[in-house]
Image 1: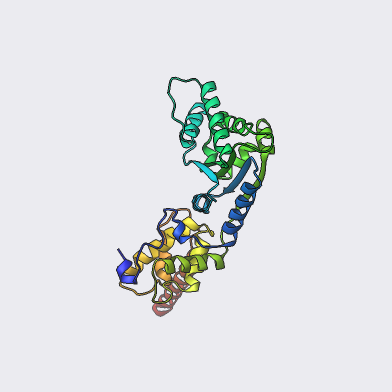
Image 2: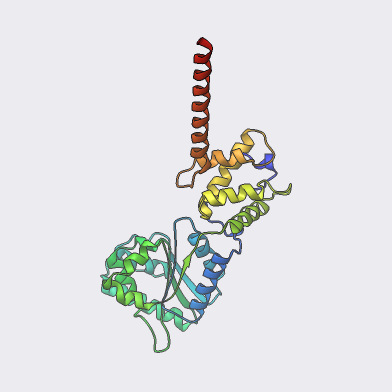
Length: 302
């Protein structure tokens, strides 16, 4: 691997959401502020949406790592669950010990008792769901019913949804109007700007131990940002591949052609627009040369 070659102590562009690489960029900081404010005020439903690769899971982990002690967090990373499976999963996350022989009504009663017990000890209970767009319709309704559990002064359970934009499309349907009205705080993650992307790349390199200056020039970093459409996951993929190509050539810095090779090798990126134009120009030049040669040859024969 290229770590020793570039003087790095760890892989800077891993796809694993690592909060140690968290960078306080505007969209991510704003999302965290919205979440923290909503949780402090005791709102029932909070939602964060964003395109694939924009950093939802990283923000989710950052939020859970920084929750005050009074919060008890139940986390469901894969919510593709039936209503029954959802109730069992919530019960397990709340630390309930129960028999599989009990029915769903009894299970719901046990969950409510556990929520009351935790609340009586000063805990605020949060249910965090990542990839919430995968929840079946019936499970979304079951989730809404969970938030009916409350005391006279506050909700017993707060729900935080991290999801792709497809969830918003589903919630726009009339049958979800009750759930939609209960989402009092929401935030939509945007892509990074070119400047933010360049700073993001340099930050990750610095955290990974880069001490020999910029491995990516600002121009090449912005070229990656443009090709990745400002999506952090794609920026990571392209940056990693560019470093691999540079390492393969024994270079000490990522050059323009290294970035170009990474972009060409990666799906879902914006390819260089100058290539077709350059090919067209070359084709025209070739034709002109060919016709000129033919004209000169004919003239020589005559």
